[in-house]
Image 1: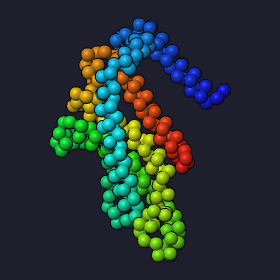
Image 2: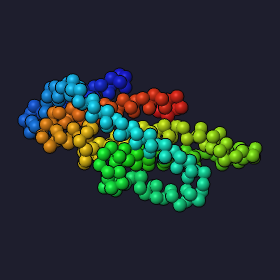
Image 3: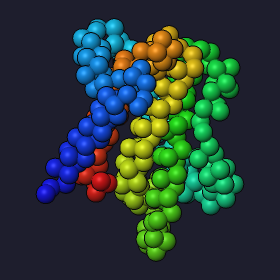
Image 4: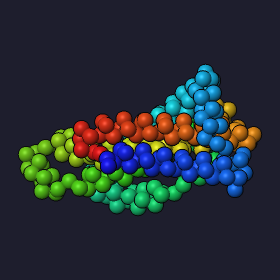
Length: 245
């Protein structure tokens, strides 16, 4: 039996278990609507032109945040890897803040950027920054000191050292971290939309939640999961060229 078949059977089993619990009467129907109700809501959602406008807003906020946070994370990771002093000063702070829930920064971001798209992009950028900077710095530290001394023995400048030695060494960890950064950036943008927005998928989700339209809410969650899955698959395919599976 292939891995793909096992995955499909597992998914089918989970869906069957969900439908069985939904139909059993053990759980309130409104909390666990049937698969038919969720599928119908999903089809109505995909047929609604307004849904794609909200999808575009979320994709723009999360995508811009990934671009900003990822770029800054790579630059900061390189800087930490090149400078021992900078690493000694800042690395403990990065390690301490990396696992912290990023939603705590939202009130500060609202003060700095207002209540439009700014804080959502900033939330996504902060979420994406930490996994990228940690992975980049880790890749920089994995470079053999002997290789660095050999390159420097040829009077290579710092930019040449970064381009010829460090950058090839961080391609794999950076591509791997971008897959994680994509997920957490999307979560960050959605959380910000849930808290304060009148656009985006997060806004639609909280509206359905408040109105107890659980089938529609689950359909939106499936759309978000599918979006993250597609982007993750694209990054995985791209990363295979460099061995980052």
